[in-house]
Amino acid sequence: MRLSATSAAAPAPAMAPAFRAATAREQRELRSRGNAKVAITPRWGRVVLGLIMAGIGIGLLAGYLPGVAPLSEQVAAKLAAEAGTTIAKINGARMANELYIAASIAAGALLGFGLLIAAFGAVFRSEVETDCRSCERTVFALRGSFGLRCPACKNYAKVNWLSVAFTTTFWLTSVSMVVVLVVLIAT
Ligand SMILES: [Zn+2]
Image (cartoon, rainbow, N blue to C red; front, side, top):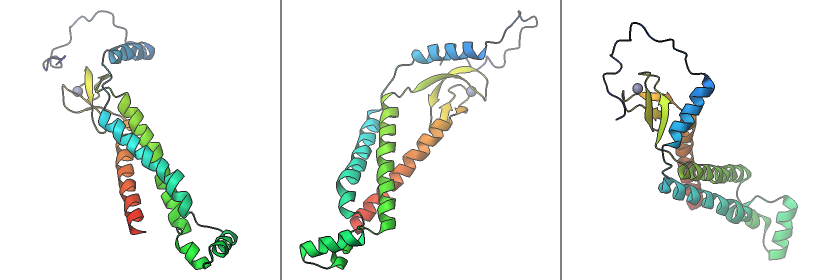
């Protein structure tokens, strides 16, 4: 641990030397220098999961969905005439318009979020230097589900909206993946 638990309780010196708070720019520079010390440790599970999700998304968009896209009346009539069957039979093998739109959105989400998950997984740093908003110490905080966790006071040092978005996205994508599978199995 880089910090002693007692430092917060230590009294401030009575005669503090002239103190100039670091400018925002200096803080940013110090922070990026601190973060450069933390090695990137890729999360290969996320990279693989993300690429699988993106692959399924591409497969659906390029392979499966075009074959079940709803047809215009003219095209359905033409195909039925060519195959010597009825328009109802041709349309029966196609998705309803609403289902097709929903499936396309889900497939696009799988592709987009899958790539994001893989990219974030590839450049993952487990620790980030930050000022804890709870105990006001500068710490190397650990990444949690919704932001950075302070190792000194165990609270969230910073709620990171990107992390919140990422976690939410992860679960939404997982759910949409299940929905897509259920729809595919049911049809
Ligand atoms: Zn803290």
